[in-house]
Image (cartoon, rainbow, N blue to C red):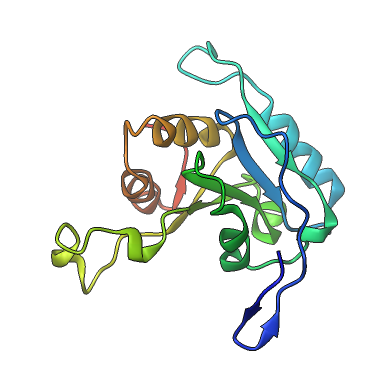
Length: 169
């Protein structure tokens, strides 16, 4: 997709293909530390749930075409997927942090939010992002996919933690 944002041309990105609608989408945007990325991938492959009863289901985008893209450009690209409610970025912060916390981004566009519902939040709009450890990706993705919970609930759970990282309820 090619377009212009603020007068600057966005780089053409490869289409994301092969993602099952139940796969969590993880996009790598930092290529400075291959060992850190391999740790993230290994952590994402671990069974999850209270007793590890669920197999992980992820779709990894590991293509340097996505390198150094800011979150808003990633969102512009992935919003075409109607079956997507959240995308996770493995960015520079992910690769440099001890917890390998990924950036969770809300796919909902601000104009999609019900103004009546969010009227009381005018001064404080709902959170659009938070960080989660790789093990939390599955919990977040699964609950958002079936509309069991809202993005804001996960963001609030992350924000009350001292390091502001979601782990699990």
